[in-house]
Length: 149
Image (cartoon, rainbow, N blue to C red; front, side, top):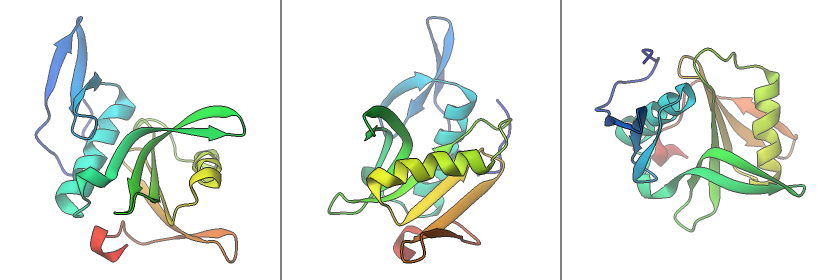
């Protein structure tokens, strides 16, 4: 798979029914190894191993009901009282991060009302803090360490 702009980690990749699968440390099972999943697994390991995010507070493929339509957030970070704190949306490395990607994560946030939004394609990462008073998101220089959230 493609080298990403994220730290390497020890992957667990195997074949199931002649297709590559990768172990998801959050869901604790093997999942299909797609380009987007490659980004997700690298990013989750980055958060846990380098940014001190507790794995127990991260969830992958979180179902949402958005205006009667079922949607899935790629990853959600929760607080210790299980309120949603951050939404993370991943794209495959070859997918450009555009305004439509931010529009997508903003729609998800209409339901969850989190403090932080992150979008990554594994090569570029954008982190925003929500400013609900102004109705805007503020881009941050870096992804905050968990203790700074």
